[in-house]
Length: 216
Image (cartoon, rainbow, N blue to C red; front, side, top):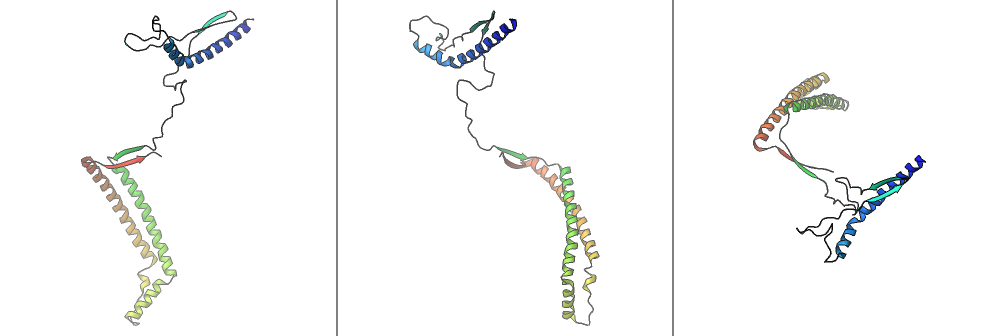
């Protein structure tokens, strides 16, 4: 018996909350109709025009219920702050397009630039040595060195001994390319670091590079 009374009370409470929501949703229209139909000589009630000229909203009615010997009052549910209104339609947010942010590069870390330049220079050095070996093998297989040596002999004379192969040996070319690659590593790292320091000084005086970023 007690369990049945509790279930009935819970059902009545749910129905009262639903009715309170409906009353809350229909309240603005009811207040407007009451304000338009009220007689001019009637006594001022809650929701009528105040002396200052502003209108105050009438208190919303409370719904009383009784079920299974349990009495209660259902108050209208107030919307959460920042939530969308329930009486109107869903607000449509206009499409403003992609956002654009204007930024400026005010400082570059010289240490990070030095590390990046060093790694890039090492990669370029390895590519230089490998490319030298590949080009030498291609030219040797095509007989370019022998053709050049024959051309020099025909031009200078057959009595002159010309051996161009000793000047373009693979070991000699690889050593020369390795030396050039090492010099390139030192120069690229030093120049990149100095350029970063000069950029920081210039940016502190006249401002850095301005960038406009677009959010897609």
